[in-house]
Amino acid sequence: MSYKLLFVCLGNICRSPSAENIMNYLIEQSELTERIICDSAGTSSYHIGSPPDRRMSAAAMQKLGFKLRGQARQFQRSDFEEFDLILAMDRENYHNILYLDPTGKYEEKVQLMCDFCSQYTLKEVPDPYYGGSEGFNQVIDLLMDACGGLLEHITSQELDLRS
Ligand code: 4NP
Image (cartoon, rainbow, N blue to C red; front, side, top):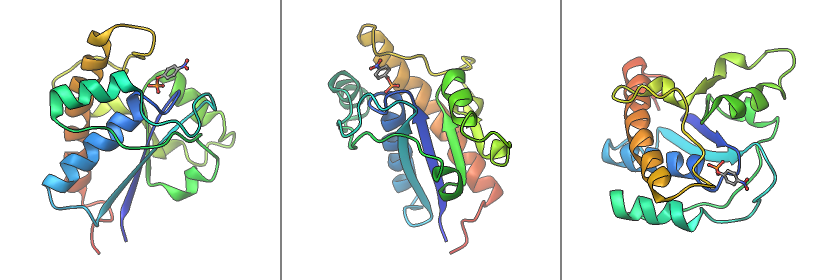
């Protein structure tokens, strides 16, 4: 059995695909590829079917040396059952996800990505879409920190990592 992570932002073309790709990179380095599965989604339908934003991919290439892979999809109610942990990039995403769970059944599965940061004190991954390249670079830095903390959290608790 694998532990399944879902990263969620608004459009699923900037922040959440970056989180998914960075997490997969760290998982490969830790040889946990079979054990931890990552996916990403957007709370909106704006960019369904689109690849990651070119500016986001350029920042990933520049800072990490790899391109971002993915195709945007919208978050759906069945994701609550499908995934073990759902990571929201900002508070608006967090509330929009929980809006789809009116009884609060899945509330504990949904967390803010920045809660796993250890170096940065920001509580949200800022939306870079309407800003300059600095915003995209900041997304990569924040997510490297948060993904590292998240992997540490998962492995230290051995959450469903036994095969
Ligand atoms: P993301 O960024 O939520 O990190 O993928 C955005 C992408 C698109 C839009 C806003 C944010 N948009 O308004 O189209």
